[in-house]
Length: 300
Image 1 (tube, rainbow, N blue to C red):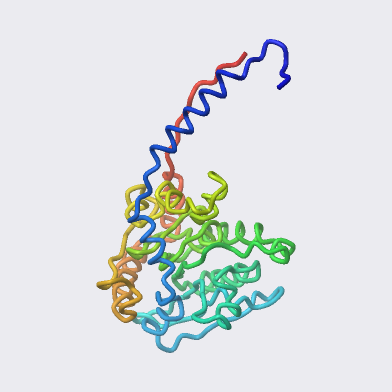
Image 2 (cartoon, rainbow, N blue to C red):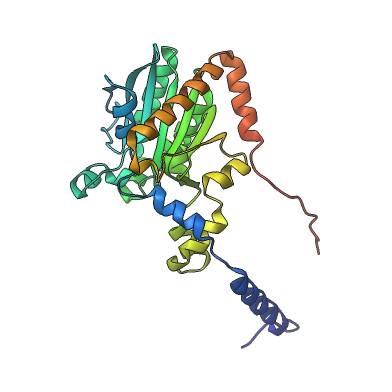
């Protein structure tokens, strides 16, 4: 094929081809990672409303964003807990096709995140701790959601959580997908249930981008380091909560009891710290995250 004079691509093509072959031979999917993905997505896994039922009798749901509509993919409201009032906010999926359609498969639209922000600000005003339960494949990517400011709604949720004066605890209870999950997870304490996952993208979407083949999802799951063990090692989450024997879907009451005990420990610790110190520690916590490397650039 014609090229610019003096430019020879043969050697470069050979290098790239060899490197691709090496990568192909070296890709060994970790079945354990994919098993965690499947458990996190188990259709009988407890959702936010299941935990609320077992942990917070008398829960009062608050609806609407006061701007556009109510989004059933996010539920939130006030609950009595160990002699205090807390604000509980979480993603909600459905059990059957009608409820999944109603809840939009747990994928919130902008009004869902704006509802969450409204409830967080309400909690801040009345000095009420905030608990968020994260379980979504990601924010809804539809045209209507983009037209109503999906990206802005997620960014504003992050800013809202960063500014809260009250104690905040986030628990990834199933899928923690992309910015749709992070919008409810910028908390003082972030915990994951043992069989949950947390990642910047779903394994299928990652595989489709990197290898142009969604069937490589198992390899993508391994590479993404999305399991609770991976993320605890990377210090992205503060604690991994064990699940009942066989998984949370086998014992709702047992899973709720484990979460309830962990929540009490976290709130007791956070409530001993002043609001100013909590915000400072929250800022430092997220500044410490990540690993990077600086390399010199050769300029011609």
